[in-house]
Amino acid sequence: MTSATQAYTYAAPSSLVDGRLGLATSGGRALSGPAVAPRFFSGVVTQAAPAAAALLGVADVALARYHQPQARPGWVRDPVVTCNGDRLRFESFSACGGVYARLDLLNGALDGEVFDRGTTNVDVNAPLREALARIGARDPLHLGVGLDELVVTTMDGAVVEKKVPLPERWLRGFAEVQVIASGMDQRGELAGMAAVRFLRGLPKKGTVWVAQAGRELKVSDRQVPGSVQLAGPNRLGTLLPLLRFAKSLRVYGPADAASSAWELELPGMRYTLTLSPERWRGFSGEGAVLDDLATDEAENDADVVGMLLNFEPEVEIGLLADRAGMPADRVRAALTQLGVAGRVGYDLSEAAHFHRELPYDKDNVILLNPRLAKARKLVDAGAVHLEGELATVHTSGGARRVSPADGSCTCEWWWDHRGSRGPCKHVLAARIVARAAVEVSR
Image 1 (tube, rainbow, N blue to C red):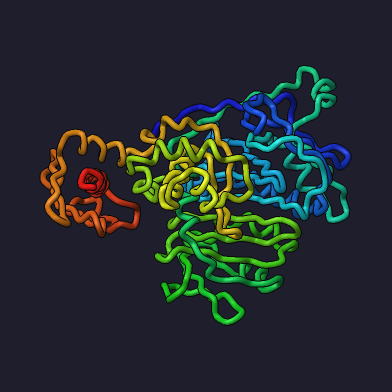
Image 2: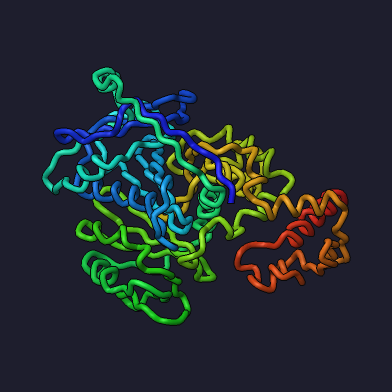
Protein backbone atom coordinates (compact mmCIF):
# COMPACT_ATOMS: atom_id res chain seq x y z
CA MET A 1 0.00 0.00 0.00
CA THR A 2 1.45 3.32 -1.04
CA SER A 3 0.47 6.69 0.34
CA ALA A 4 0.56 10.35 -0.44
CA THR A 5 1.04 13.03 2.17
CA GLN A 6 -1.41 15.80 2.86
CA ALA A 7 -0.37 18.93 4.72
CA TYR A 8 -2.87 20.82 6.85
CA THR A 9 -1.93 24.43 7.61
CA TYR A 10 -4.13 26.43 9.96
CA ALA A 11 -3.79 30.13 10.79
CA ALA A 12 -4.53 29.25 14.42
CA PRO A 13 -5.72 26.22 16.39
CA SER A 14 -9.45 25.59 16.70
CA SER A 15 -10.79 26.52 20.12
CA LEU A 16 -13.90 26.69 22.26
CA VAL A 17 -13.91 29.70 24.59
CA ASP A 18 -16.94 31.17 26.40
CA GLY A 19 -19.39 29.31 24.19
CA ARG A 20 -17.69 30.36 20.95
CA LEU A 21 -16.47 27.43 18.85
CA GLY A 22 -14.00 28.56 16.21
CA LEU A 23 -13.04 25.84 13.74
CA ALA A 24 -9.83 26.70 11.93
CA THR A 25 -9.83 25.73 8.26
CA SER A 26 -7.05 24.52 6.00
CA GLY A 27 -6.72 24.98 2.24
CA GLY A 28 -9.89 24.25 0.34
CA ARG A 29 -12.08 25.13 -2.59
CA ALA A 30 -15.06 27.43 -2.51
CA LEU A 31 -17.46 28.99 -4.97
CA SER A 32 -15.22 32.01 -4.91
CA GLY A 33 -12.25 29.81 -5.91
CA PRO A 34 -9.29 28.14 -4.13
CA ALA A 35 -8.74 29.47 -0.61
CA VAL A 36 -5.91 29.15 1.90
CA ALA A 37 -8.25 29.37 4.91
CA PRO A 38 -11.86 29.67 3.70
CA ARG A 39 -14.55 31.14 5.94
CA PHE A 40 -17.94 29.52 5.44
CA PHE A 41 -20.26 30.19 8.38
CA SER A 42 -20.75 32.18 11.55
CA GLY A 43 -23.78 31.87 13.78
CA VAL A 44 -25.57 30.04 16.56
CA VAL A 45 -26.01 26.28 16.81
CA THR A 46 -29.48 25.99 18.30
CA GLN A 47 -28.86 22.45 19.60
CA ALA A 48 -25.45 22.77 21.22
CA ALA A 49 -25.11 19.49 23.14
CA PRO A 50 -26.01 17.02 20.34
CA ALA A 51 -24.00 19.01 17.80
CA ALA A 52 -20.89 18.96 20.02
CA ALA A 53 -21.27 15.25 20.79
CA ALA A 54 -21.82 14.35 17.12
CA LEU A 55 -18.86 16.42 15.95
CA LEU A 56 -16.76 14.62 18.53
CA GLY A 57 -18.06 11.32 17.09
CA VAL A 58 -16.89 12.24 13.59
CA ALA A 59 -13.48 13.15 15.02
CA ASP A 60 -13.33 9.86 16.94
CA VAL A 61 -13.92 7.85 13.76
CA ALA A 62 -11.04 9.70 12.06
CA LEU A 63 -8.75 8.47 14.87
CA ALA A 64 -10.00 4.88 14.95
CA ARG A 65 -8.63 1.58 13.68
CA TYR A 66 -11.42 -0.93 14.23
CA HIS A 67 -9.40 -3.77 12.71
CA GLN A 68 -6.17 -4.47 14.60
CA PRO A 69 -6.57 -1.27 16.67
CA GLN A 70 -2.94 -1.02 17.79
CA ALA A 71 -1.45 2.44 18.02
CA ARG A 72 -0.22 3.78 14.71
CA PRO A 73 1.70 7.06 14.91
CA GLY A 74 0.90 9.53 12.17
CA TRP A 75 -2.63 8.27 11.50
CA VAL A 76 -4.34 11.39 12.89
CA ARG A 77 -6.52 13.05 10.26
CA ASP A 78 -8.77 16.05 10.49
CA PRO A 79 -12.43 15.86 9.47
CA VAL A 80 -13.66 17.39 6.24
CA VAL A 81 -16.40 20.03 6.31
CA THR A 82 -18.56 21.13 3.39
CA CYS A 83 -20.85 24.14 3.46
CA ASN A 84 -23.72 23.52 1.04
CA GLY A 85 -25.44 26.79 1.85
CA ASP A 86 -28.33 25.49 3.92
CA ARG A 87 -26.26 22.96 5.91
CA LEU A 88 -22.82 21.95 7.12
CA ARG A 89 -21.57 18.40 6.51
CA PHE A 90 -18.69 16.99 8.57
CA GLU A 91 -17.11 13.77 7.25
CA SER A 92 -14.36 11.36 8.25
CA PHE A 93 -13.08 7.90 7.42
CA SER A 94 -11.52 5.46 9.86
CA ALA A 95 -7.82 4.68 9.49
CA CYS A 96 -8.65 1.03 8.77
CA GLY A 97 -10.90 2.10 5.88
CA GLY A 98 -14.01 0.27 7.03
CA VAL A 99 -16.13 3.00 8.69
CA TYR A 100 -17.37 6.25 7.15
CA ALA A 101 -18.95 8.89 9.41
CA ARG A 102 -20.93 12.01 8.53
CA LEU A 103 -22.69 14.67 10.57
CA ASP A 104 -25.23 16.81 8.71
CA LEU A 105 -26.00 20.02 10.60
CA LEU A 106 -29.23 21.03 8.88
CA ASN A 107 -30.90 24.39 8.54
CA GLY A 108 -33.03 23.75 11.61
CA ALA A 109 -29.93 23.59 13.82
CA LEU A 110 -28.17 26.66 12.40
CA ASP A 111 -28.98 30.33 12.71
CA GLY A 112 -26.35 32.57 11.18
CA GLU A 113 -24.61 33.90 8.09
CA VAL A 114 -23.15 31.89 5.22
CA PHE A 115 -20.11 33.64 3.73
CA ASP A 116 -19.26 31.10 1.05
CA ARG A 117 -19.87 27.50 0.00
CA GLY A 118 -17.14 24.91 -0.39
CA THR A 119 -15.02 22.23 1.30
CA THR A 120 -12.02 22.26 3.62
CA ASN A 121 -10.45 20.39 6.54
CA VAL A 122 -10.99 21.60 10.09
CA ASP A 123 -8.57 21.38 12.99
CA VAL A 124 -9.81 19.15 15.81
CA ASN A 125 -7.09 19.15 18.48
CA ALA A 126 -6.91 17.53 21.90
CA PRO A 127 -7.94 20.62 23.95
CA LEU A 128 -10.88 21.18 21.63
CA ARG A 129 -12.00 17.56 22.03
CA GLU A 130 -11.97 17.97 25.81
CA ALA A 131 -13.98 21.18 25.56
CA LEU A 132 -16.58 19.64 23.23
CA ALA A 133 -17.09 16.78 25.67
CA ARG A 134 -18.04 19.26 28.42
CA ILE A 135 -20.82 21.07 26.54
CA GLY A 136 -24.17 20.64 28.29
CA ALA A 137 -27.76 20.91 27.16
CA ARG A 138 -28.14 24.52 28.35
CA ASP A 139 -24.78 25.79 27.13
CA PRO A 140 -24.85 28.37 24.32
CA LEU A 141 -22.77 27.55 21.24
CA HIS A 142 -21.68 30.03 18.61
CA LEU A 143 -20.00 28.29 15.66
CA GLY A 144 -17.54 29.83 13.24
CA VAL A 145 -16.27 27.65 10.39
CA GLY A 146 -13.20 29.63 9.39
CA LEU A 147 -11.63 32.16 11.73
CA ASP A 148 -12.28 35.86 11.21
CA GLU A 149 -9.37 38.26 10.77
CA LEU A 150 -9.64 39.57 14.35
CA VAL A 151 -9.08 36.11 15.82
CA VAL A 152 -6.15 35.40 13.52
CA THR A 153 -4.36 38.66 14.21
CA THR A 154 -4.66 38.27 17.98
CA MET A 155 -3.01 34.82 17.87
CA ASP A 156 0.30 35.84 16.34
CA GLY A 157 2.67 32.91 15.96
CA ALA A 158 -0.05 30.32 16.50
CA VAL A 159 0.12 28.80 13.00
CA VAL A 160 -0.59 25.05 13.13
CA GLU A 161 0.85 22.62 10.62
CA LYS A 162 0.07 18.90 10.37
CA LYS A 163 1.32 16.35 7.86
CA VAL A 164 -0.56 13.09 7.56
CA PRO A 165 -0.30 10.03 5.29
CA LEU A 166 -3.24 9.42 2.96
CA PRO A 167 -3.11 5.74 1.96
CA GLU A 168 -4.63 4.81 -1.37
CA ARG A 169 -7.17 2.49 0.26
CA TRP A 170 -8.47 5.42 2.36
CA LEU A 171 -8.86 7.63 -0.69
CA ARG A 172 -10.54 4.86 -2.67
CA GLY A 173 -12.88 4.22 0.24
CA PHE A 174 -14.50 7.65 -0.14
CA ALA A 175 -15.33 6.78 -3.74
CA GLU A 176 -16.57 3.26 -3.03
CA VAL A 177 -18.81 4.22 -0.12
CA GLN A 178 -20.84 6.75 -2.10
CA VAL A 179 -21.48 4.22 -4.90
CA ILE A 180 -22.40 1.47 -2.42
CA ALA A 181 -24.66 3.83 -0.46
CA SER A 182 -26.50 4.83 -3.63
CA GLY A 183 -27.57 1.18 -3.98
CA MET A 184 -29.00 0.97 -0.45
CA ASP A 185 -32.62 1.13 0.67
CA GLN A 186 -34.07 1.72 4.11
CA ARG A 187 -34.53 -1.66 5.82
CA GLY A 188 -35.68 -0.67 9.28
CA GLU A 189 -36.50 2.13 11.70
CA LEU A 190 -36.88 2.57 15.43
CA ALA A 191 -38.12 5.58 17.35
CA GLY A 192 -36.77 7.11 20.55
CA MET A 193 -36.23 4.73 23.43
CA ALA A 194 -36.63 1.65 21.24
CA ALA A 195 -33.52 2.74 19.32
CA VAL A 196 -31.66 3.24 22.60
CA ARG A 197 -32.57 -0.24 23.87
CA PHE A 198 -31.66 -1.86 20.56
CA LEU A 199 -28.22 -0.29 20.20
CA ARG A 200 -27.29 -0.85 23.83
CA GLY A 201 -28.35 -4.49 23.55
CA LEU A 202 -26.16 -5.35 20.56
CA PRO A 203 -23.28 -7.81 21.04
CA LYS A 204 -19.81 -6.30 20.94
CA LYS A 205 -18.24 -8.80 18.54
CA GLY A 206 -19.04 -11.19 15.74
CA THR A 207 -21.47 -10.87 12.84
CA VAL A 208 -25.23 -10.61 13.17
CA TRP A 209 -28.15 -9.82 10.88
CA VAL A 210 -30.77 -7.21 11.69
CA ALA A 211 -34.30 -7.13 10.28
CA GLN A 212 -37.48 -5.18 10.94
CA ALA A 213 -40.16 -7.18 12.77
CA GLY A 214 -43.24 -5.09 13.40
CA ARG A 215 -42.12 -2.05 15.35
CA GLU A 216 -38.91 -3.70 16.50
CA LEU A 217 -35.54 -4.58 15.02
CA LYS A 218 -34.66 -8.21 15.60
CA VAL A 219 -31.12 -9.58 15.77
CA SER A 220 -30.35 -12.99 14.26
CA ASP A 221 -27.21 -15.09 13.91
CA ARG A 222 -28.11 -15.87 10.30
CA GLN A 223 -29.37 -14.02 7.27
CA VAL A 224 -33.14 -13.74 6.87
CA PRO A 225 -35.17 -12.02 4.12
CA GLY A 226 -34.84 -8.26 4.30
CA SER A 227 -32.06 -8.35 6.87
CA VAL A 228 -28.96 -6.18 7.01
CA GLN A 229 -25.56 -7.59 7.87
CA LEU A 230 -23.75 -6.05 10.84
CA ALA A 231 -20.15 -7.23 11.18
CA GLY A 232 -18.30 -5.90 14.20
CA PRO A 233 -21.13 -4.20 16.13
CA ASN A 234 -18.49 -2.35 18.17
CA ARG A 235 -17.94 -0.20 15.08
CA LEU A 236 -21.22 1.53 15.95
CA GLY A 237 -19.64 2.74 19.19
CA THR A 238 -19.74 6.44 18.31
CA LEU A 239 -23.55 6.24 18.18
CA LEU A 240 -23.81 5.44 21.89
CA PRO A 241 -22.95 8.90 23.33
CA LEU A 242 -25.65 10.34 21.04
CA LEU A 243 -28.49 8.10 22.18
CA ARG A 244 -29.75 10.56 24.78
CA PHE A 245 -30.55 12.95 21.92
CA ALA A 246 -31.88 10.38 19.42
CA LYS A 247 -35.29 10.88 17.84
CA SER A 248 -35.02 7.78 15.65
CA LEU A 249 -32.64 5.22 14.17
CA ARG A 250 -32.82 4.23 10.50
CA VAL A 251 -31.01 1.23 9.03
CA TYR A 252 -30.05 0.97 5.36
CA GLY A 253 -28.66 -1.89 3.33
CA PRO A 254 -28.21 -3.10 -0.26
CA ALA A 255 -29.96 -6.07 -1.83
CA ASP A 256 -27.06 -8.42 -1.03
CA ALA A 257 -27.13 -7.49 2.70
CA ALA A 258 -23.38 -6.84 2.86
CA SER A 259 -22.53 -3.26 3.80
CA SER A 260 -24.87 -1.33 6.07
CA ALA A 261 -25.58 2.24 7.13
CA TRP A 262 -26.93 3.44 10.49
CA GLU A 263 -28.46 6.89 10.74
CA LEU A 264 -29.42 8.62 13.97
CA GLU A 265 -31.88 11.46 13.60
CA LEU A 266 -31.01 14.12 16.16
CA PRO A 267 -32.64 17.51 16.77
CA GLY A 268 -31.97 19.47 13.59
CA MET A 269 -29.21 17.11 12.41
CA ARG A 270 -28.32 13.58 11.30
CA TYR A 271 -25.35 11.39 12.24
CA THR A 272 -24.61 8.47 9.90
CA LEU A 273 -22.17 5.57 10.05
CA THR A 274 -21.60 3.38 6.99
CA LEU A 275 -19.87 0.05 7.67
CA SER A 276 -17.97 -2.27 5.35
CA PRO A 277 -19.14 -5.92 5.04
CA GLU A 278 -16.52 -7.23 7.48
CA ARG A 279 -14.61 -5.74 10.38
CA TRP A 280 -11.29 -6.48 8.66
CA ARG A 281 -12.46 -5.34 5.25
CA GLY A 282 -12.08 -1.76 4.08
CA PHE A 283 -14.25 -0.17 1.42
CA SER A 284 -11.26 0.33 -0.89
CA GLY A 285 -11.40 -3.18 -2.38
CA GLU A 286 -15.13 -3.41 -3.02
CA GLY A 287 -14.87 -2.60 -6.74
CA ALA A 288 -18.25 -0.88 -6.91
CA VAL A 289 -16.87 1.97 -9.01
CA LEU A 290 -15.03 -0.05 -11.65
CA ASP A 291 -17.74 -0.60 -14.25
CA ASP A 292 -18.61 3.09 -14.35
CA LEU A 293 -14.95 4.11 -14.53
CA ALA A 294 -14.32 1.66 -17.39
CA THR A 295 -16.66 3.44 -19.81
CA ASP A 296 -14.97 5.46 -22.52
CA GLU A 297 -17.10 8.52 -21.86
CA ALA A 298 -16.73 8.65 -18.07
CA GLU A 299 -13.68 10.90 -17.88
CA ASN A 300 -14.89 13.41 -20.47
CA ASP A 301 -18.41 13.36 -19.04
CA ALA A 302 -17.00 13.98 -15.56
CA ASP A 303 -15.32 17.15 -16.79
CA VAL A 304 -18.63 18.41 -18.17
CA VAL A 305 -20.73 17.43 -15.15
CA GLY A 306 -18.07 18.71 -12.73
CA MET A 307 -18.28 22.18 -14.20
CA LEU A 308 -22.03 22.20 -13.52
CA LEU A 309 -21.70 21.35 -9.82
CA ASN A 310 -22.20 24.30 -7.53
CA PHE A 311 -21.87 22.91 -3.98
CA GLU A 312 -25.55 21.99 -4.04
CA PRO A 313 -26.94 20.17 -0.97
CA GLU A 314 -28.70 17.81 -3.38
CA VAL A 315 -27.52 16.94 -6.89
CA GLU A 316 -30.52 16.27 -9.12
CA ILE A 317 -29.48 13.77 -11.79
CA GLY A 318 -32.36 14.63 -14.13
CA LEU A 319 -31.54 18.33 -14.01
CA LEU A 320 -27.85 17.63 -14.54
CA ALA A 321 -28.66 15.39 -17.50
CA ASP A 322 -30.68 18.18 -19.12
CA ARG A 323 -28.01 20.80 -18.48
CA ALA A 324 -25.17 18.53 -19.66
CA GLY A 325 -27.09 17.21 -22.66
CA MET A 326 -26.43 13.55 -21.86
CA PRO A 327 -28.46 10.52 -20.67
CA ALA A 328 -28.99 9.95 -16.96
CA ASP A 329 -26.90 6.74 -16.93
CA ARG A 330 -23.88 8.66 -18.23
CA VAL A 331 -24.43 11.34 -15.59
CA ARG A 332 -24.38 8.60 -12.92
CA ALA A 333 -21.13 7.22 -14.35
CA ALA A 334 -19.70 10.73 -14.39
CA LEU A 335 -20.68 11.18 -10.74
CA THR A 336 -18.81 7.95 -9.95
CA GLN A 337 -15.72 9.35 -11.65
CA LEU A 338 -16.13 12.56 -9.68
CA GLY A 339 -16.62 10.50 -6.53
CA VAL A 340 -13.23 8.85 -7.02
CA ALA A 341 -11.76 12.33 -7.18
CA GLY A 342 -13.55 13.15 -3.91
CA ARG A 343 -16.03 15.54 -5.50
CA VAL A 344 -19.38 13.96 -4.63
CA GLY A 345 -20.91 12.05 -1.74
CA TYR A 346 -24.28 10.39 -1.21
CA ASP A 347 -26.99 11.24 1.34
CA LEU A 348 -29.10 8.20 2.19
CA SER A 349 -31.83 10.15 3.94
CA GLU A 350 -32.46 12.27 0.86
CA ALA A 351 -31.49 9.57 -1.67
CA ALA A 352 -29.32 12.08 -3.53
CA HIS A 353 -25.71 12.94 -4.27
CA PHE A 354 -24.18 16.12 -2.89
CA HIS A 355 -21.22 18.17 -4.06
CA ARG A 356 -17.99 18.54 -2.10
CA GLU A 357 -14.33 18.84 -3.02
CA LEU A 358 -11.68 16.67 -1.40
CA PRO A 359 -7.98 17.34 -2.11
CA TYR A 360 -7.46 14.44 -4.51
CA ASP A 361 -6.02 14.64 -8.01
CA LYS A 362 -8.46 13.43 -10.67
CA ASP A 363 -5.48 12.26 -12.74
CA ASN A 364 -4.85 9.57 -10.12
CA VAL A 365 -8.24 7.87 -10.65
CA ILE A 366 -6.73 5.05 -12.68
CA LEU A 367 -3.78 4.67 -10.29
CA LEU A 368 -6.18 4.35 -7.35
CA ASN A 369 -7.95 1.45 -9.12
CA PRO A 370 -5.28 -1.07 -10.16
CA ARG A 371 -7.82 -3.59 -11.49
CA LEU A 372 -9.02 -1.04 -14.00
CA ALA A 373 -5.44 -0.15 -14.96
CA LYS A 374 -4.66 -3.84 -15.57
CA ALA A 375 -7.85 -4.26 -17.60
CA ARG A 376 -6.90 -1.39 -19.89
CA LYS A 377 -3.45 -2.95 -20.39
CA LEU A 378 -5.13 -6.19 -21.51
CA VAL A 379 -7.27 -4.24 -23.96
CA ASP A 380 -4.28 -2.32 -25.33
CA ALA A 381 -2.36 -5.60 -25.74
CA GLY A 382 -5.17 -7.09 -27.86
CA ALA A 383 -5.67 -9.87 -25.31
CA VAL A 384 -9.49 -9.85 -25.52
CA HIS A 385 -11.35 -11.84 -28.17
CA LEU A 386 -15.15 -11.65 -28.30
CA GLU A 387 -17.06 -14.82 -29.17
CA GLY A 388 -20.74 -13.96 -29.26
CA GLU A 389 -21.93 -13.41 -25.69
CA LEU A 390 -18.66 -14.77 -24.29
CA ALA A 391 -15.04 -13.69 -24.48
CA THR A 392 -11.58 -15.16 -24.10
CA VAL A 393 -8.92 -13.08 -22.37
CA HIS A 394 -5.34 -14.26 -22.89
CA THR A 395 -3.00 -13.64 -19.97
CA SER A 396 0.42 -14.81 -18.85
CA GLY A 397 -1.38 -17.27 -16.58
CA GLY A 398 -3.44 -18.77 -19.38
CA ALA A 399 -6.69 -18.06 -21.21
CA ARG A 400 -9.68 -16.90 -19.14
CA ARG A 401 -13.24 -17.53 -20.30
CA VAL A 402 -15.47 -14.57 -19.49
CA SER A 403 -19.18 -13.81 -19.60
CA PRO A 404 -19.37 -9.99 -19.72
CA ALA A 405 -23.13 -10.01 -19.07
CA ASP A 406 -23.13 -11.74 -15.68
CA GLY A 407 -19.52 -10.94 -14.77
CA SER A 408 -18.38 -14.54 -14.36
CA CYS A 409 -14.84 -15.63 -15.18
CA THR A 410 -12.63 -18.69 -14.85
CA CYS A 411 -9.93 -16.79 -12.92
CA GLU A 412 -9.12 -17.31 -9.25
CA TRP A 413 -10.46 -13.86 -8.30
CA TRP A 414 -13.95 -14.69 -9.51
CA TRP A 415 -13.96 -18.11 -7.86
CA ASP A 416 -12.88 -16.53 -4.57
CA HIS A 417 -15.37 -13.63 -4.57
CA ARG A 418 -18.12 -14.53 -7.09
CA GLY A 419 -18.69 -10.87 -7.91
CA SER A 420 -19.08 -9.72 -4.31
CA ARG A 421 -16.11 -7.36 -4.63
CA GLY A 422 -16.75 -6.03 -8.12
CA PRO A 423 -15.60 -7.39 -11.49
CA CYS A 424 -12.16 -8.90 -12.06
CA LYS A 425 -9.72 -7.36 -14.54
CA HIS A 426 -10.68 -9.90 -17.22
CA VAL A 427 -14.39 -9.05 -17.03
CA LEU A 428 -13.59 -5.34 -17.08
CA ALA A 429 -11.40 -5.79 -20.15
CA ALA A 430 -14.09 -7.82 -21.95
CA ARG A 431 -16.74 -5.22 -21.17
CA ILE A 432 -14.53 -2.40 -22.48
CA VAL A 433 -13.99 -4.26 -25.76
CA ALA A 434 -17.68 -5.25 -26.01
CA ARG A 435 -18.79 -1.62 -25.58
CA ALA A 436 -16.32 -0.49 -28.21
CA ALA A 437 -17.65 -3.13 -30.64
CA VAL A 438 -21.21 -1.90 -30.12
CA GLU A 439 -20.13 1.69 -30.82
CA VAL A 440 -18.37 0.66 -34.03
CA SER A 441 -21.46 -1.23 -35.26
CA ARG A 442 -23.71 1.80 -34.85
